[in-house]
Amino acid sequence: MFVAKTVKEVRNFLKNEAKFGKKVSFVPTMGALHEGHLALVKKAKEIGEIPVVSIFVNKTQFNDLKDFEKYPRTLDEDLSKLEPLNPSLVFAPEDLEIFPRQSSFKITPQNLVNCLCGATRPGHFDGVGLIVTKLFNIVKPDVAIFGEKDFQQLAVIKKLVGDLNFDVEIIAHPTLREASGLAMSSRNQRLSEAAKIKASHLFRVLCEIKKNPHFLSQKKEELLALGFEKIDYLEIRGEEDLELNPNSLRRIFVAAYLEGVRLIDNLPFDNQLPN
Ligand code: AMP
Image (cartoon, rainbow, N blue to C red; front, side, top):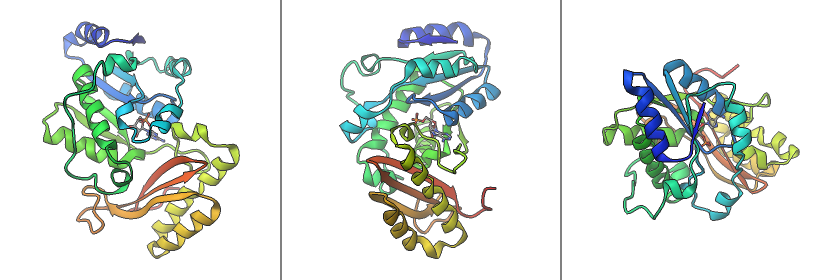
């Protein structure tokens, strides 16, 4: 597992390794790694001969500076967690390596971002588009793996890759959950133990809406009564177009705040309940 800090180191490493047409598989992360991230890395190992992981807290996708500052940074622990999986390369650059100056170019999605997290976090997906574009240009992966936990992000990245002809296959990975049902997230570290228990109600509510969608507005009230401070959305939308009246399969999406931490989750609507 080679740990690179600079773009040059990544390029030199990959030039040597990828010479013989080996497949580069890529998992971009913002660190504070948990089992959800590690499942993506395992998948990358299965499908590529050169699995690459990046760890970079991307300032441009945070619309709230305080959220960026509070985001957990645990590089040493992250590297220890990755070591047993032994990806070929971990790219963990400093801010200035990726953004030595403000970018003169923007990646602004024209679709899929007027709802859900796009509506409540203005500019967030511009930041995601920019960092993913830069990382794809640095790593030049054949395959990249993204989690369904960030379902809108996955949809935006698929569109980015299709519309701008990136030569990379995007693979979706299902959400890993705690035994309580709570979707694993780096942000969970910021919750008290009591709040972690409370946070698992998000998954319960998604499962109940899946059984009976008429409960939707009632469930919003229920979350607020349980102590969630704010609900950005609790909605059923299409998996492909993210529209309220979709042509495709539907999914239930939620974003809610607990102890000031914004938590998101989603569940497919048009198939069976998970066990
Ligand atoms: P992040 O570090 O939050 O930017 O996430 C990096 C990648 O891991 C993204 O593709 C996420 O969707 C994915 N991810 C985060 N949490 C989970 C989870 N609980 N299960 C599966 N994938 C996840």
